[in-house]
Amino acid sequence: MVFILKEGVCKEEVDNFVKMWEDRGFSTILSVGTEHTAVCLIGNTAPIDLPHEVETNKIVDYGKRVTEQYKAVSRTVHTDNTVIRITGYDTAEGRTEDVLFGDGMFPVIAGPCSVESEEQIIEVAKAIKKSGARLLRGGAFKPRTSPYSFQGLKEDGLELLFQARKVTGLPIVSEVMNQTQLPLFEDVDVIQIGARNMQNFDLLREVGKMKKPVLLKRGLANSIEELLMSAEYIMSAGNDQIILCERGIRTFETMTRNTLDLSAVVLLKQKSHLPVIVDPSHGTGIRSLVAPLSRAILAVGADGLMVEVHNDPAKALSDGGQSLDPVQFDELMKDMKKRSVMEGKQV
Ligand code: PEP
Ligand code: MN
Image (tube, rainbow, N blue to C red; front, side, top):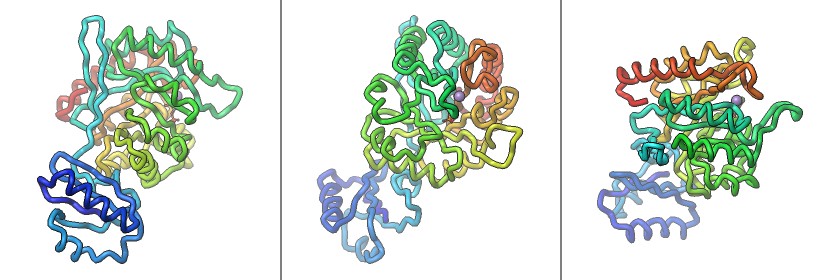
C-alpha cells in the first residue's frame, strides 16, 4: 500500500506518519520526490480500511494498493525518473564532466572485459575517451565459467583502473563478486553486480548500505520481475542509486551467446523509475552484432549503453570475440552521436 502525501507537508508530519505505521507493525519505505512524498507500507495491508485512512488523515492526498511486490523501485510510488549523477574527474584540461543516467542523456560505458595490464587499460581508456565514452569499464574480479580461465588481476586490476581514471578523467565501473571485496571498491565510481550475482541477496544488501551508484545486471535466467525485486533489495537497504542493465538471457538459440531482450527495456521503464542501460556485447557475444543492436538500443529508449572494447581483441584474455577494437568503437560512437540528436538525447 502506498500513501501519497499532500504537497507542502513538513518533515515532522511525515516522521509522525511513518512512526504511526511502524508502531502498527509495518515496515515503511519513504520516497521523497521533487513534487510528491510517498510512504509505502510493507506487511499485511489487507485489513487496512484505505478510504478511512485517507479521509481521516489530513496530510494524505490519496492512497493506493500496490499489487507488485516491488514497491520502492516502482513507478507507482515514484513517478519521476530517478537520475543517477556520476561525478567526473579533472582531465588534463582541468575540466570535470558529470554523467547523468535517466535524464535524457545516452552515456556510453566502454572498456575491456578484463583489466589485463597497465599498457592495455591506459591505451583503451585514452581511445574510448577520445571517441566520446563517458565511463571506463574493466573487470578486476572476473566470474568465469571455468575455474581454469583468467580470473582477473584483482586488487592490482583496480589499481590500474584508478591510474586510467587519473590519466583520462573517466569515472570507472567494475564488478564486485562478493561482499568481502567491498572495502576495495570504496574508490570505484560505479559498482557492478554481474549477471551471476543478481540474486546474491547478501551482496545486494551490503551494496544497499553504500552511498554509491550500482549497476545491476539482469541474470542469465532471470525474469524482469526478479530483476526489479533484486533492485528492491538494494533500495530497501538504503541505496537508491541503481542503474538496471539488460544483458541478454539464455534461450534455446545457439547462434548468439544470449538473446538480447529489448522488450525488457520498455517494460522496465514503464514499471520502474530507475534508469535502464543495455550491454549488447554480452547480449549477443558477436562483435558484428554490437553496432546494429546499439542503434536499436538507442531507438527503444534506453538510458545508456555498455560496450566491450579491447585494444587488440584477438589477444584478449576474455571475451575477445565480442569486443570492438578502438577503430570500430570510434565508428560506433560517430553513428550514436548522429542518431542521438534525432532522438533528442546527448551521447
Ligand atoms: C561483465 O560485464 O564483465 C560481465 C561479466 O557481464 P555479465 O555479468 O553480464 O555476464
Ligand atoms: Mn565480458
